[in-house]
Length: 228
Ligand code: SAH
Image (cartoon, rainbow, N blue to C red; front, top):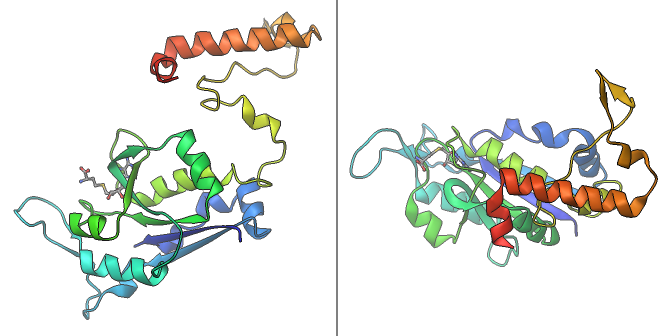
C-alpha cells in the first residue's frame, strides 16, 4: 500500500496544485503516493452548510465547529485507520526534516486545514489531532501549509526522487546546512568555480564541502549545531 494523504479542507479544488507538478506529480500518476481532498462543508447539517460559528467568550473571527469537523474526520478515517491525524496550526510543533522522514515511512496522513481563527479545541483533543506548524508566521488557512508538509514528505518516499545520494548531504539531513553548489560555466561575471571542485581530488572536495557546511551553519543557524 502506498503512502496515502487525505486532506480535509474548505478548498479541495486547490489540490493537488503544486503537488501535481514535476517529480511529485509523476509519482502521483505512477501510484507511488495517493492524494484525496474532502470538502468539509459536505458534512454540515443545516441548509446554509455552516461549518463555523462565533468564538465562545467573544472576539473577532469565526471558529470551525467541532461536531462538523469530527464527522468529516470519522468519514475520512474510520476507527482503525492507521494514519496519523494532523492539524496544520501555527501553535503546532514546528515541522522538521526528521518528522518528514517519519511520516514518509508511514501509511500516509489525514491532514486537517484550518481556516478563520482556527478549530474548536475539543475536536483537537477528542480526535487526537497532532498540531504541526510550518513556521512562526500566520497564514490565512492550512491549505498551503499542508502542501508544504506533503511536499517535504512525499519527496522522501522511495522512488519519487531519482538519485538517492542527492538527498544524504542536503540541508538538515546531517544537522547541517548544505555547502554551496556550482555548475558550468567555469567563469560567471568574473567569478570562478572554487578550484578545489575541479581538482578531481574527491577527498579534498568532501573535506571542503564539510567545512563550508559547518561555517554556513555556524553563521546562519547556530541553533542546529546545539541540537546535535
Ligand atoms: N488564530 C490562529 C491563526 C489562525 S490562521 C492563531 O493565532 O493561532 C488560520 C489557519 O491557517 C489555521 O487554523 C491553520 O490551519 C493555518 N495556519 C496559519 N498559520 C500556519 C502555520 N504557521 N503553520 C501551519 N498552519 C497555519
